[in-house]
Length: 217
Image (cartoon, rainbow, N blue to C red):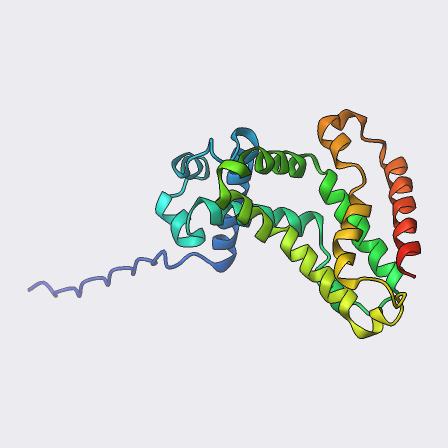
């Protein structure tokens, strides 16, 4: 009589499980990067969510779930680029000397303004904003508003305000500083090939900042 053998237990299959947080973050960044490239190449109105989804190899529904639609995705693109080229996030609580804080802000901000892709995106916004209010609002919320509010909080700090001339209109300082940093944007956008070398651009930026300091101290 043959002895019965017990069945060999099946090897449990390993469940794929949920993707790691790092993988999700990487995929989201790939989607943002793909969208940014398409916006730069074709403009905002010229890019559909379907085209972005194909390029990023995701479902259109994924874009809606993560960003709420194309405007939300553009906002994520702008915020990602701002964080990469403009890492000043806590200026309003920075305790260093005023000149040192503003000099650092100005350097990062100017580099961001002159970055080629940033200039293209700004051209896209300016060209399409009049016919697409959603685009204009999204652009303003993702960048200019954040910068201006940060500067407003900084100049309104009692310790900073105490160092300024009593007659300085503090509410105007954010726009005044941004204008001094910006220089001549008309020439920059119309004739980008005339942009001076970095060393010369920094020298000119320092001169404009000196004018700013003379107007507030």
